[in-house]
Image (cartoon, rainbow, N blue to C red; front, side):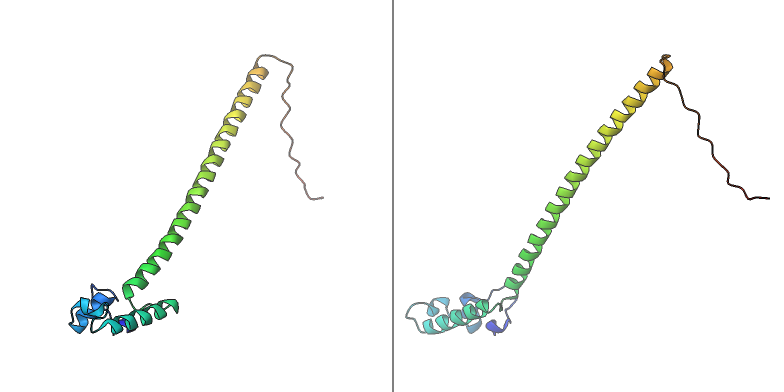
Length: 133
């Protein structure tokens, strides 16, 4: 029953639960006591199931699944934090460039207004392509 995954709620697939389900004192499963060979056989089968990738304890399967999910979420969070850092750096660089360009525009306007020999170019003419009549 336990090795098939039919573990009572709140219990684990272990010798303690095996003893409780058999209504036998747990100490009877250890050493040379009457059920020592059953404990050894139970643990051998349990180990074989675990090595085969099967788990008879639904809690253990849930724990394993949650550990994998947790690792994926940590990786996803790390990538998001890295992207956030890169975007913050990009934003700071863009703001610095805009500020420098703004200062240059102000400097050029002041130089133009001070009567230097900078001449403003006329606005470009737009050509209208018409049809021949």
